[in-house]
Image 1 (cartoon, rainbow, N blue to C red):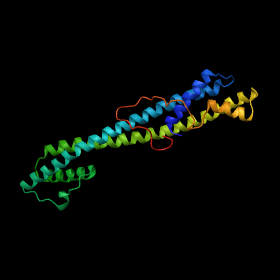
Image 2 (cartoon, rainbow, N blue to C red):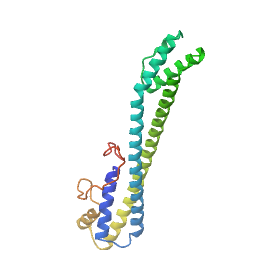
Image 3 (cartoon, rainbow, N blue to C red):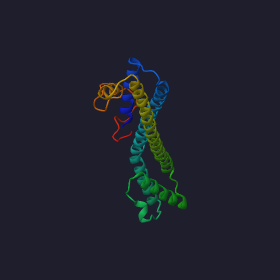
Length: 216
């Protein structure tokens, strides 16, 4: 079940237990409310991590043309200064990795021949920082996604425990078979039959919409 579906069901269950309270379920209900709150926080953290990765990726994307241009200018300056360049120094690849590698080759030639390339050094440092920030953001998103899946699992366990507690109370009230099933489903409706609205969860700017993978 997706995290948004878990939170929607939790909202419905809490509303039903408020409108039609049952005794002897306080422990299970309290645990359910606690893990629901943790799930909400984990989902928000994952959305914020996704937004941070989107921003970091945009910075790398926007800086790539400038990095490529500085490499071209540095190479041209070295050629003008009569510095012999190996073929790989003229590599036309423009992925972040290839650009950083090209910059290092050009800077090595500059250092070896005494040709200063301050603009390339500055651009290389900024670009390197942007690429490193993107890698860190990607790792943070992965960690947040793992934490969210764990939170969904804890919520599922607490939901099962609460459902069993509710069922036990209903059975002690004398409900059986169809009546028991109908009453139980009023508290824990099946997916697709819920009428409760989806909860409005706070989202960070630029965060993605509904998750595309189960359990997220």
